[in-house]
Length: 209
Ligand code: C5P
Image 1 (tube, protein in one colour):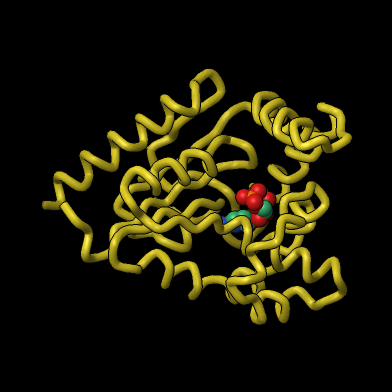
Image 2 (cartoon, rainbow, N blue to C red):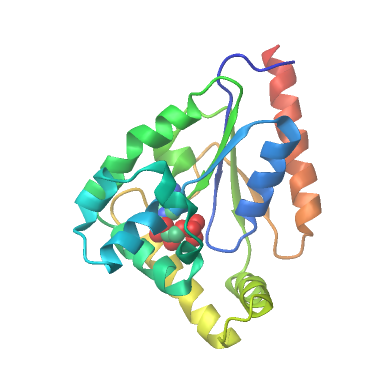
């Protein structure tokens, strides 16, 4: 079936749960467009660290801002979870995300509030999670592999601080939508999680024909 209308896959979850890898694999498998919405908050954070006012930085964002490798650092990640608490920042990023989700041909969006706030009508909603220790070990391996000097304890503290901020904020807190399917990757290979996600999407698409 070629998708000529919109078909949205919403994938939420905490940092380093595997949601980014699963989202990319699912998008490649189905030929859907993919938006890592964390990058929007990271790009706003980078501008704030450079001295800009948060809401203005969010309103001024252009697609090119998402292509900066410097957005991947822990400093930017922490700042992203701080600017993400500000309702005006979230509001300024809403339309872009919703238009992306509505494109013909299918879209995968991953983040923290896709199934709950951005795309409450998404055809498929997944909540990808794992224990904080396992997520910290994954992120530590990834950062060490890139030569970043950081300890496992520092990464764990970083992950826990972001979890607390993301789950505790009043506007669009991180939580599973009531109709989301949870995939716990604590003891699951990411390849198996991808296979489970693909099967779920296949089943949903068949029902829509
Ligand atoms: O997904 P990533 O780790 O890149 O996200 C960085 C931060 O951006 C998160 O910790 C969260 O505070 C924020 N974010 C958000 N809503 C989203 C995506 C990311 O609040 N949909």
